[in-house]
Length: 143
Ligand code: ZN
Image (cartoon, rainbow, N blue to C red; front, side):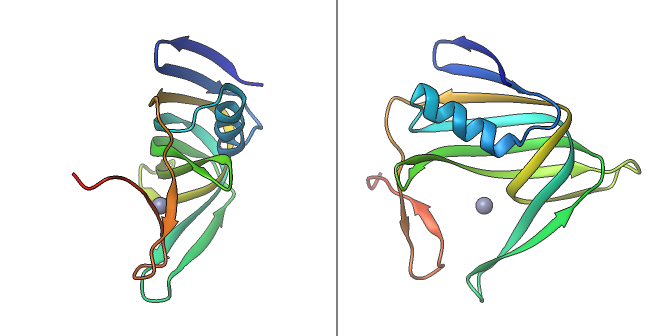
């Protein structure tokens, strides 16, 4: 169950222990119709699946970790993919010896707390497949 505070375009969520941060953020965005946004967060987790994108192979190389981490930093965005809000986020995770790992986020089970700020944009972000990189990149007008 999320704890939520809203102020203008800012939505502050607290993801509680045992819940998946990605599912909770995407579910909240669906519920209140956030179709574009910027996401920041911190907290602690005890299960995470992160990856590194191999540009040569055009695939995400996933790694699963089941240990206590501080969520030092989460940064990401919300766009619409297949009609649903999609969180694209990267995380930096701290171990008990103060060393860090990080990567592209797939799953994160919260252990202590997950404190997330979503700044909503009054538009819709979409993504399209980029043939050169194999990535699903954000669309937009030329600046
Ligand atoms: Zn990424």
